[in-house]
Structure formats: structure tokens, C-alpha cells
Image 1: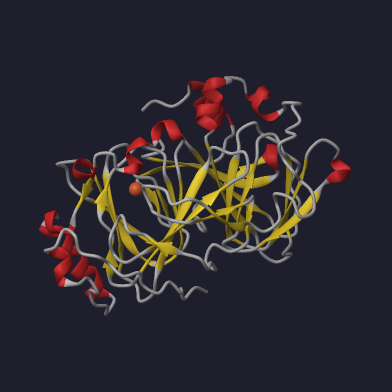
Image 2 (image 1 turned 120 degrees about the vertical axis):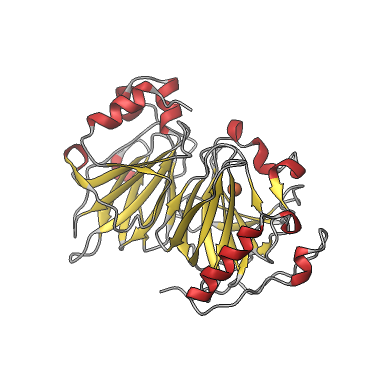
Length: 366
Ligand SMILES: [Fe+2]
């Protein structure tokens, strides 16, 4: 899928590294270069699967430094790869700014046109942030970077106040939806630690006895979820539209990605890894570490996400009994390399209606 020509031109003009390929094994160490306009080091991540839908950037903030204020009409999700810092946000008058402090594995949402400023609170090491937005779509609709980054619109939907939308996200009861069958969503603009959740719910759709947690943000069409699944197990293969960005907060495993009928590509992952399954490519996630793995999925725009809901389950999800035998073979090989064993019950490979029990979700993370 071609990307916006305006976006492509703007990216190339920034003069920072652009990393392509199927995946980035570690965003915490991927090469960044000086971005003079923003007084930081940064890189664009242009992995296959973004397909003109989403943008991923990495920002490295030098020790102790505060970056210049920014705003953008394209809303942005920010995940903290490493470091300790602070974000100031304000709408309208700068003296009304509020601050929130983040740490490794925090996540926050910067709504459209909210002025914000990042500070690295550690004087002895850089901080790293991963940013996800729909910037290529925004630049296609408004093909003028000046409009995107220097727009005087004041977003009065945003409560940048003490105790407002940037206070710690809250669990909100919701009616069960037909897809994931969950009853709680986490709502807000600031999620202090993606490795420390309670209220995870059973993820019944993709097997493995895993758990899930849905993330929702005020006045936003951006959505996400976090999936947690046990050691020695793997989820069902499935496919959907492009632009679903997967970042690993914790775990030791791999995913397979393949276009129907083509060779399977192995994506090794651990904390800090990122990949984006390409449009209509099957993908499947495997936990071969000795503890629960978790991934953050930032969803694509609703217009591209139709088949995430498995309208055509038979065509878009592969049940365990129907798998290519190579899938299990590779799983056993990768487990053996780590001295781990499969925890997949034999019956799951025979019974299409096998009912998984939700497994414990406590993670061993550093
Ligand atoms: Fe998926």
C-alpha cells in the first residue's frame, strides 16, 4: 500500500535514520541520529505492515535534557522503552501546564494539538520513547506539515488539569462485547506500568489460556490492547488488516508471519521488540520463555481493522488441529533451546471446541 507522498517527503527531509524490514529486534538499542529541529536523537521505523497507515518513531532524550515544546494535529501514543522522565502538557496558556512522571514501560496518549514537552529526569543516562501515530494518514488528508505541526487550534476536549485525563488510567466496567467478551476497559491518557495490571480478563478467542486488557482513550478513535499468555504455549494464527503495531513489554518468544501459501518468517522477540503484521498476512505468537509474555497492540484506524473482529473466522483464523505441522516442530525446537517444555494440552490439537482455563498472569520482569 503506497504511503502519503507528503509524509514520505517530510520523513526523508528530517535526516535521521529510517529502519525498514519485517521487525526491529530491540527498539532500546536501534540506531538513532541527531534530529536538530527537535534537539534529540531519533529514528523512523518503517517496517513492512505499516503500509501507509501508521508511523513509528523512536526518540532518545539526552541525560537531564528537556526537549523543545511540540504539538501535532495527529494524536500520538508514546511507550517508554527505557528511562525515567516527565511530560508536561498544556492546552492554551502555558502557565496552566501539568506534569506527569513516567518510567520504563509507562504509556501515554498525546491528544491532537496538545502542547507537550519531554524531560529526561536522569542525569546519567538517555531515555527512549517509542511513538505511534496515524501521521501518514494525517499528512495525506492535510498535505502541509505547517498545518500539522503549527496549528493554532485549541483542543478544548482535553482536560490537562490535576486529576484530569492525564491522571492514572482507571478500570471502567463496560457491557460485554461480542468479540473478546470482556467486561472492563482501562480508560485514560496515562498508564504508569504496562507490566503491572490487575483485572486482566480471559482471552477466549485465540486459545492458549491467555488474558487480555483493552485500552481506551478519551475522545479518541485510537484503541489498543495488551495480551498476556503463559510460558510453553502459543496462540492461534490469524490475519487482519495492516497497521497494528506490536511492542513487547516483557517476554521471550517469537512470532511467525506469512502470506497465505508462502514461507513463514520468524520474528524473534523479547522486551523492546517491535513488529507489524502486514495486510492479510497470517501471524501467530509463541511464548518459549519461562514466564508469561505480554505484548501491547496499538490498533489500526477503524476503517482498516474490520477483520480483527474475525467476521470470517474460518478464513481468517487457523485452529490448532488445522495447523501446518512445521508450526509445532519449530515450537518444540525453540523450547528445547531454552530448556523449556510445551504446556499445550494434547486435546487442544484434536478438539476444535477445547475450553481453555485462564492461566496465571504474573510476570517476571526486571
Ligand atoms: Fe493480530
